Structure formats: structure tokens, C-alpha cells
Length: 214
Image (cartoon, rainbow, N blue to C red; front, top):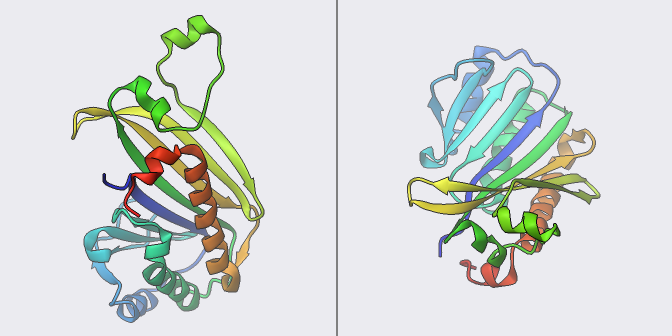
């Protein structure tokens, strides 16, 4: 059984910056171990770099930094490269505080049919019998409170065209409640990862989790 994790995103927001070509070039050279230059995106982005052998992306905007990975691994495995890049951005572009911090995981779990979702989730919905018989699945949302902030969970069904079967889409996003100073950022991100992991284990059945690669 393949792990269900498809995508991890880290989003940092900060005060507006003025990027210079010299600093961007310096940043690219200093992080050549992790980055390859990619074309600048259309829109508000300033620069875009490919990471992780083409399975990741670092995007710099006037007030934001986004890291994206489609390697199928969590922050625990991404931490060395991601934290090196984040700390470099903070140092090179002089960012002492992130005004907003969020980390999100997108999971997709194949299922036989929509009614079989009960075999995978611990979530139970109470509703009148006539309604329960007509509804197979519906999009729902939950918010979990943690000391660092909130973890938001979205669950919804979908049809996976590639494999021609139904699936459960599970999106989990952790958000910091307050601005985060540069020295505290790694610790906050670790707590976010742990919060996402806790929600993942609470929502999915033990039977399903036990069958995942450990």
C-alpha cells in the first residue's frame, strides 16, 4: 500500500520586501545544493526555484515565501533542505518575523466505493435514517485547537481519473495563531507537523494506519 501523502506546502508571510537582482543571485548561489533556477512565474511572484530533483518548488513573492513538495514525504524528511532554505531567506533578505505561518498536507486515499469510506475514517455522522440512506458522502470541515494555533481538516470524496476509482481527499492545514520570530520558527513548524500527524491518526482508522508503510 502506498502512503496517501501527495503534497506538502509551507507558507510564510512577512513585511513587504524589495528584492534586488544581486541578492537573488547570491541566494541562488548560496543554496545551489538545494535549488536549481526555474523560470519566474507570472503574477505577483518575484522568483521561483525548483527543489528536490524537480519534485519541489520555492516561490518568493513581495510578502511571502512558499515551499511545495510532491515527494510524498512529510516535514520530518523535508526538514534539512527546507530549514536551510528558510533560514537562508531570512538571513539574505533580512526577515526577522513571519506575520503568518501555515503548513498543509494533502492526502488522497483510494476506496472501492463511496460508502466504504466508513472503513477508513473514525468520523461518524448522526442524521435521520431517510437522509442517511440517500447520502453516500459529503464534504465536511473540522477545526482542532492546539497551543500554537489551529489545525483545520477538510474531508471530501472525489473520482480519481488516473486509477479510475473513488478516493477520499484529506487536506490538513496547521496555522500559527501569532507572528513567529525567526529563531522560533523551526520549533513552531515542528509543533505544526506533530499537530497534523495527531489529527491524521485521530481521523483515520487504526486498521488503515497499521497497513501503511512504517
